[in-house]
Image (cartoon, rainbow, N blue to C red; front, side):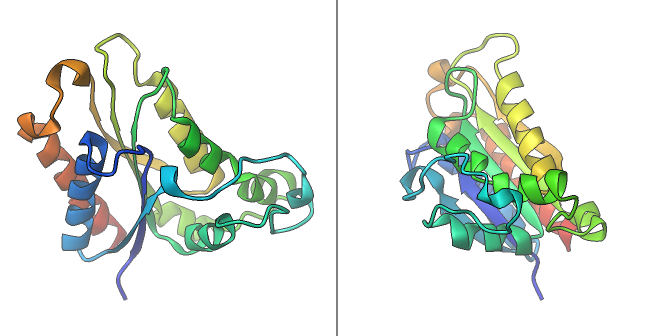
Length: 196
């Protein structure tokens, strides 16, 4: 049975540079034998976390929207690929709101002490992080990487590896940097092989 990978696109531009890199990573993971489901987060009808705290004593969220199905996918997946641009030194709003909704996982793991993912499964689950930034300034990826690391800990899918490219305001088209496109494919393939 193929390993399941969820691929999150954090950019609202479905045919942009971030999407191109994600598609290459997906191609790599699929060629390594994984089944990949791509989720275009910016185009989902998802509310932000309202901190109702029902999830303190429950495995569900009080907000009824598309996230109910997403939580199930995140329990069942073997690997995760996140591709996002840097916006104001951080994760774009829609993707960040999506991540914040995983309070359900946070409360299960840290409040009730009963994570949805067993320690044995956690050891095998891995996250590949892909990000681009417009500017070429020091520490431009620090914010997004810290958020991705924290998210991986909450959902028990630890940060494994990354593909990063800054200075996109100058580069404009990621296809002019074939080494970055190839890195996205290669890391997706490596992820798939490690999961398999």
